[in-house]
Amino acid sequence: MKVSVSTIDASQLEVDVLVVLVSAVTKNPFGKGAGKAVSSAWADFDGTPGDVLTTYPEKGVTARKLLLVGLQSEPSLEDIRNAACTAAAHCRSAKSQTVGMVVPESKAGADLTGQALVMGFQLGLYKFDRYTTGPESEPDPERLVLQVSKDDKAVRSGAERGKVIADCVATARDLVNTSPDEKVAPKFAATIEQLGRKHGFEAVTWDKDMIEEEGMGGLLAVNRGSVDPPTFSVLEWRPDNVANKKAIVLVGKGVVFDTGGLSLKPTKNSMDHMKADMSGAAAVVGAFEALARLKVPLYVVGLIPATDNRPGQTAYVPGDVIKMHSGKTVEVLNTDAEGRMLLADALSYATTYRPELVIDVATLTGSAVVALGDHVGAVMTNEGDGADARLQRMVESGERSGDRVHPMPMFDDYAEQLKSTVADMKNVGGRTGGAITAGKFLEHFVDYPWIHLDIAGPAFKAKKHGYRGVGGTGFGVHLLVDFLLSRASVRKGR
Ligand code: BES
Ligand code: ZN
Ligand code: ZN
Image 1 (cartoon, helix red, strand yellow):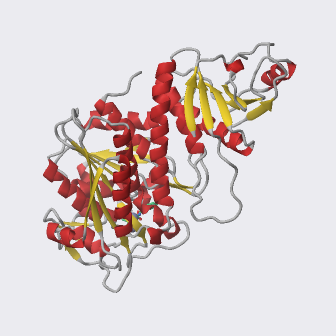
Image 2: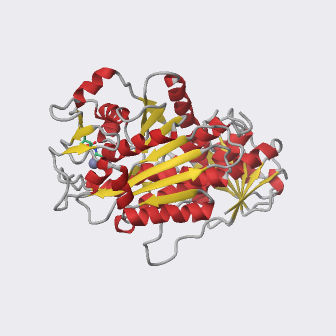
Image 3: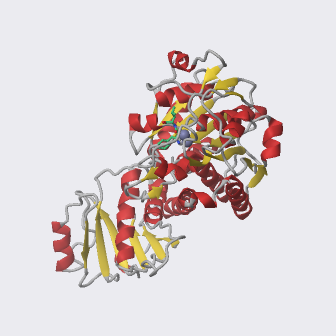
């Protein structure tokens, strides 16, 4: 879909359908000039979010059709994305090929509003039809024209960025939605390399020998029940003139399928979602695509440990004591707590960069879902210099991006739950505070400023929720990109 910005009066836009996002307080921009049907439609439509009304102007408007779409008054960026998504769905089912959309006023400013409109519209049209046969689905709109009377430059820069970020979210969704047998670790790593070549970031794959040489005991232990070898992908984006000397490292959990291992998961509402257990890795890959395509002036490294977790003949068992990459030992008491095993090795390897900041993204615990539900991720950070500010910046990126995250406490009392009698720690901390004890486990392996994002809830949807359809949501891509853009402070208009 092509996106453009126009300052031509809305009434004169040559499009199949003209979309106006209407709140309770929006005035009819056409007055009586578009005829009675439009005035009556406007009077009837109360702008309830999710509602739409189609009307046909008798005069004064070039577009054949006018689509009114409900929007909150004083809309948030997420409200705007959702309204644009509603519009997109209607345009597709009405087979409208060219769509004009009047850019609404918002407190967030013209740049971010343009970005939100394009993201909501484009992600609302996302579909994953790689495996379906049968009749073609309805065609997508070919062109979206954002109409503004002022600030067209800001809207244009936001719209261009929005298009790229929406593509990157779609990349992550595609990776998550891919059938597990097509993304066993070596194939997944090859796909990441391919994306690197396509978009211009570096991606190198370590094979099992290299992983053994490096001593990544956690990743190797999880892989023991699998017939496919593990991989460790190292991504890098390092343009000239970067704003940071020391690397920012993104770590993504790449469990390409989580059966639970010998601590086997039940199928319904549990194992049946576990092709999405590489959503953290997908978010990191999506963020790298955005870094490269937006040419963000930051030095960023990505680390993706990948394997499936299976109960094969040689699988690791409860009671095994594993020597990790850092040299610390872990008593495995539940093989389903595998994400932390491989993340720990990646976090420990990240120390070699002496990084400015490391952010890990992972579908780590069911406990995070119990605590925060399906729509919000958990964020944790190690205490010490700048902890509050770091947390605050991530929460703000969550608010702007719609990938919302909420802080969890990291008091030391929680660490006691991980004490082992035979090793340095256990890999499970008991029934209570599970998302936090997982965070405390990872904290043992970091010696730098660190942010942990547990996205087990929002990474995957069984039911459509706004512009996030069924399946992989790409949660985390926009969050990371917003966070990194703020660090690089390249975005105008804020
Ligand atoms: N991949 C799961 C976490 C998960 C749960 C992701 C629900 C998405 C939706 C993770 O590997 C896991 O199984 N965690 C266990 C840890 C427990 C054994 C300490 C969990 O949360 O039950
Ligand atoms: Zn698990
Ligand atoms: Zn898992």
